[in-house]
Length: 211
Image 1 (cartoon, rainbow, N blue to C red):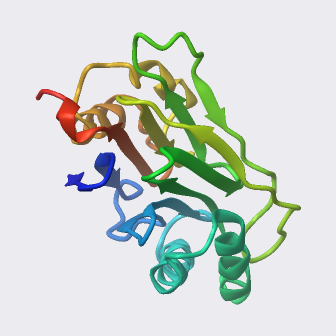
Image 2 (spheres, helix red, strand yellow):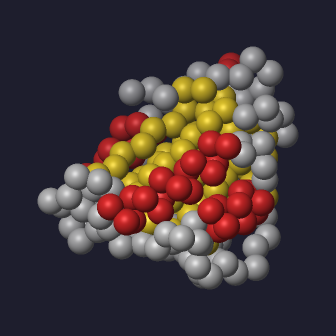
């Protein structure tokens, strides 16, 4: 999916997910929304799997839907209060400022995130730092982290139902929806729910990734 901006960059994104084999509801959920300053993206992994895990991650997404203008740290704190009567969730919350081409994030638990910079940038792959804890049960001290974005940079957020070596696939020359599906097909574990969200930052004059 492509979210354009007439003022600066645009976001091309895709998601792939599946429930724990044999179950209908997944405890892994995603959220992507346009905001007044750019975009808000998140991945939630309700603890365990099944209906209770799904209820926890759904409650987290509902908070995000109601507070899209807040910064990542404040969003996680709001989610923490809302999830206290659930089994809790891991979560990564990311905002993108379209005017400053700046990504900010905060994360708790076993969601993994990576940013692969597009050539010819010589910057190394960067990992989104997550703090240990559980949203709704045990919240660590949180600080927002920031990273400037360049044309073609790719962000991937994955729940722990995706094997950690998925990062090797992030530099494949696929559009985000195809890349997300590839990662799910090749790196999903058979013992958990699984979800991966892929987003690529683009400038209008550059177009989007070829199919």
